[in-house]
Image 1 (cartoon, rainbow, N blue to C red):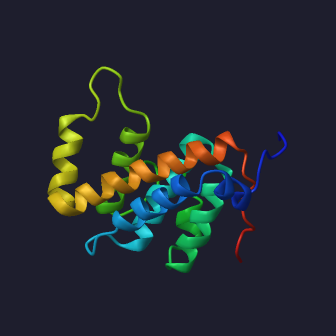
Image 2: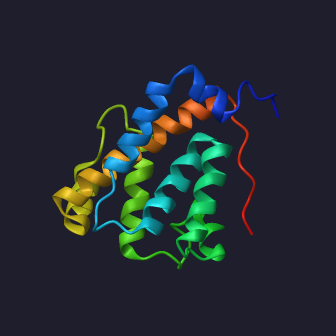
Image 3: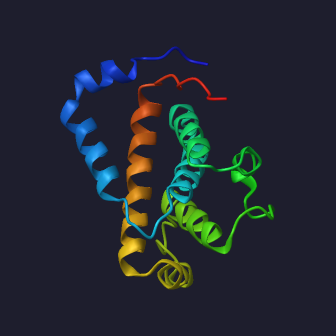
Length: 154
């Protein structure tokens, strides 16, 4: 593993407005119709796809605190094959994957957008899309600076 370039605190010292802005956008993306555990699953999946060890561990810790079972956490990467995820979680995870790796020719496929809109409604979907945007930004920042992950919680 390459050496870390900076710790989180050092990074925050370099670009405090950007770090604060990402934090504010993350808080603004919360919606009462979006369960905290579901949002953590979305963050975990995007972080897996982007290879961000820091965000992956941070959101796994948070998911556990929000009551997401350890068995479910171990299967996020294979959610399509797993029977542990609800239809709502599956829609959110599929949306997270599609927005993390945008199709260069078509962007977000209309059938997925329609299914997500049906499942979440306009306002919650907008919040979920913002949440996916935020985790992808955090992933890129943490990967660029090789921020070491926090300790796993028991």
